[in-house]
Image 1 (cartoon, rainbow, N blue to C red):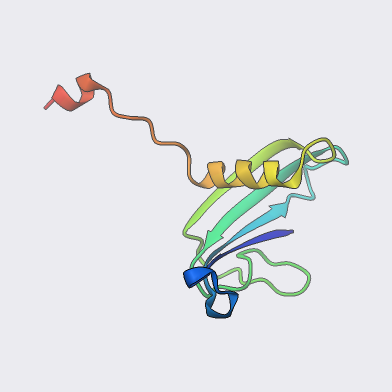
Image 2 (cartoon, rainbow, N blue to C red):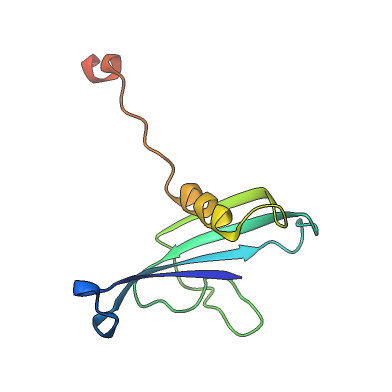
Length: 107
């Protein structure tokens, strides 16, 4: 499992750091292979320090993610871990396409 913790450091001071959110990326052991990984992704509320899936050391299956997504077919050994993090963020926060002019004009 990969955990991405996002903190705000007011004035750049680590001593004043506060956590804004956590992103959990959990490999699906049922469908992943040694070279390709399938991952469940969850963005949790501030203060939630456990993933929303049951895992070996605990987890919190009753926790509700703010957003969730899935990454499939990630080349585990060929790509940098931050490539996976980027895909995970995009899976939870897909890009918003601007509304077309026609859609705005339709009542």
